[in-house]
Length: 287
Ligand SMILES: [Zn+2]
Image (cartoon, rainbow, N blue to C red; front, side):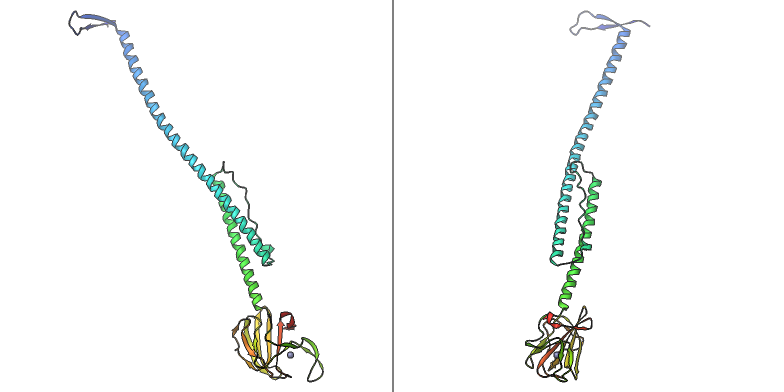
């Protein structure tokens, strides 16, 4: 094969044809270099194109990640606020217990103050842990408040069921305790108070309860007995009239009878007894 190739150059404006002799190897090298150049150029252009796409994606992810971090920080701050609110609730709780004189220190539940996650370097699992702890706190607080409600309800119920105040308008004519019987002259136990009052004066019940007995007895005359629960019973005797029926629910201050002089009695008065667990106690401390 010839080492050279010959080209004929034809000038545009006519004239002599010019033969050009080119080395075949040089031509091959030139073509190879051209292809290599184009190849490299395409490679870099391609690379640059994909690098640009990657870069944009990276930028997008950076923005997204920053948004998420801010979102997490907001969550951490919300959690902090919630824990503070719970702390305040716990203090209010303690104050209510103190005010209500509730002796249930065994039921006091401290707020679990878990360490706050660092808002800058917080992870989702840490936030989840805090949320779980808060949920437990809230549930415990709810139970504690239910206990307070129950205890207060009990206290209200006990208070309403405890005899209080005068069962009729009058004056004390005989006290609780041993005294000489005005009839036999012997020393006997007087198990209640006598309140002198005009016949017909209203007799009101001293606490909420249920009428347990309405009867006439030779000694006590017309009598009403009311059961208040919690061991308390009250008795109202010598009435001129009883105004309630057995089983009737009565509220403190409600009229249940009228003062009279029935049974063994020396004059118009109310004989008033308070029993605790079946034992007569001095009604004076309940007036
Ligand atoms: Zn009496």
